[in-house]
Each structure stands twice: as structure tokens, then as C-alpha cells.
Length: 60
Image 1 (cartoon, rainbow, N blue to C red):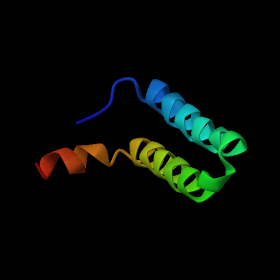
Image 2: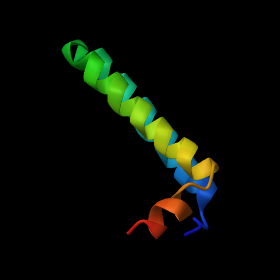
Image 3: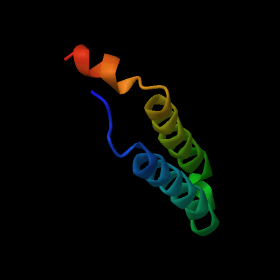
Image 4: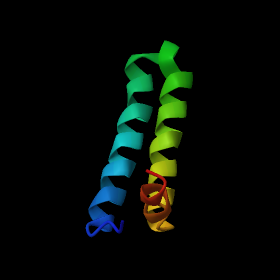
């Protein structure tokens, strides 16, 4: 399964990661969770750039 709008997905993943990181300014007690979630969004972006969603789709 290729993603036809890869650039948009990469942009959205980075925006989500930044949003979560910025939440730590308001909720510093959740910093660990925010960092973890933002890292996961960046991992999604990495999977997109490496075309790994095609192999993931075949597993279903």
C-alpha cells in the first residue's frame, strides 16, 4: 500500500510531534508521556519515508 500524499503525512506527523512537545509547557508533569508520544509520531514518519506501510498492509 503506497501512500500517495507522503509529503502531507510527513508534515502532519511532525506537527503532531511538535504539538505534544509544546503541551509540556502547560502540563510539565506529563513531559515523559509527551516525549514518548512525539517520538512515536516521528517513528510513523520514518515508516512512511521507508515505505514500510506496504509490508504492514500485507500482514492483515
